[in-house]
Length: 143
Image (cartoon, rainbow, N blue to C red):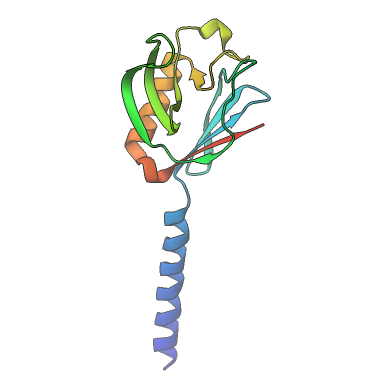
């Protein structure tokens, strides 16, 4: 009987542990609008911290916690003069994390609401999202 209880306990612990792990995001992008930074963590370890540009005056970057909705290796904004949006990870309607050619503006609000990154950083984030999957990625935007 003791052996059965011990086996059942070990099995239950393993299953419970797996369910918690499966709910936790493998990849987390924390965007801090006040500091204009994005911190990327993989398996709970910070792997990158980058300067970003979020919404400038008159525009808004949505706050909250999101999963990626879709990606595009190269997208052109239908709303803003066909502006290029390389390595786009869309997380809330038309809002995305993407590369920009306006790297001199990184570190201060400059966008129409998207989260802009240096193109090399956007490519790295895009690749990580594709690698771990949408369900294992969380995008958190805070003040």
